[in-house]
Image (cartoon, rainbow, N blue to C red; front, side):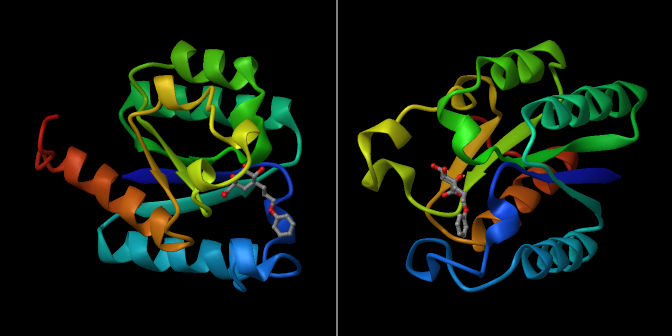
Length: 155
Ligand code: CA2
C-alpha cells in the first residue's frame, strides 16, 4: 500500500541551519529513512515537499482520491509553519475524510513560542506526533501500518 510523506514550507532547508532545533539530517536523508522504514513495514513510501500551500492542498486531494480507490493508506504530514495559519489545509484534510493524515513535527512545538502552540491541522488529523525529530516520521508510519493491519488500539 502507498503512503505519502508530505513536508511543507522551509523543510527543504533541513540540515543547513538551526541544527539545535531541527537536527542535522537533510530532507533527502529524512526521506531516505522514511522509504527504508516504510519498506520494513511493508509500505511503499513516496515523498513530496513544497513551499506552496496550494501544492500541498493538491497532494492532499490526490491522496484522498487514491485512498477512496483503495490504493493508498494515508499521509504523514509536516505542514511546517502552515500548521499555525492554514484553514485551507484544515479544510482540505476535512474534505478528503476518511483519509488518515498524521501530523508530525520535528520539534516540540508546545515547548516553543506561543504562536506555535495552536494547530489548525490537529483537529482533522488522525493523530499528532511532536518533538521526536526524524523518529516521529517512523512512528507515524508505524501507526499507519498498524491501522491497516487492524492492530490499532482504539482511544
Ligand atoms: O517542528 C517542526 O517540524 C515544524 O513544523 C517546523 C516548522 C515550524 O514553523 C513549525 O512551527 C514546527 C519550520 C520548518 C523550518 O525548517 C527549517 C529547517 C532548517 C533551517 C531553517 C528552517
